[in-house]
Length: 109
Image (tube, rainbow, N blue to C red; front, side, top):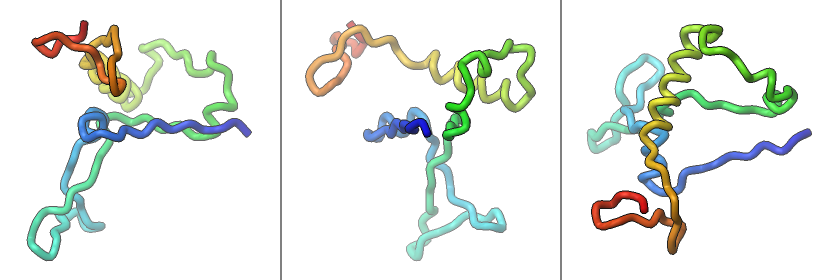
């Protein structure tokens, strides 16, 4: 069996790049509240990205699909992934603490 690797965002900034904070709903679809009356929130993925051990049983060619062959749901997920990746600024240098090196305008250098 092949090992499965998981990447976990650890900072709030990293978490909210891949998740939205949304109100938690009960089994009837109603918002859940704390005893103090505050809305309970939970994290929801911005796009679908699930891998399990069976994915590793296929060669890479199995996953090469032309855009026109995607079903509606897969195309929507792919479009969300493209939008997410397009919003990531390129990082050329990493400095102390593994943080990107930026100029005075906070742009990567």
